[in-house]
Length: 232
Image (cartoon, rainbow, N blue to C red; front, side):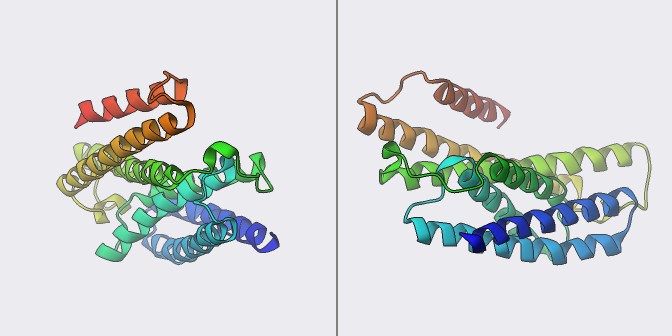
């Protein structure tokens, strides 16, 4: 669809510009640039929301078929959390420094891999698609936010240890607040991840007659979940 092509490229250009402005604002301590980035992130997220919901309505299934749809959906969850944090605090939380470029790269990869929608495979025609993929993307978004907090935490901690003041990092939440927020999002993602694995096992039983087949995707999903559990 032409409008989807325009929307996805519009989002890519806005996220690319926002990434550049965010990076420049943080590195060169330009608060005005950080404020400008907000006016780019919000319309980009709005466009991505229209793209996400529009694809869902048009196809009749949760957007999770192929690289492009997973990029749209995964990026949307990461940015939904980012925008929520901004609207809640009315200031930069710092996570956008990570989530915006990640969403940009996801969308770019998806477009390059699959410029046109793929037909829905038979295995995806299941009511478990929504449950499994929803919680998978919810976990991805949560982990992306936790990673964003981890990035700015390390940057701010390094500056404080060196006694450097007067940087854009000073306007971010305290290290204690970021540490607590990072833990909460890891825990939230960990729970969503667990639901994703269990629902995937039930889906596999419905499709192939086995709850677990030691497929590489299944194994790495379990390993990553256990690693997050150890970090908690």
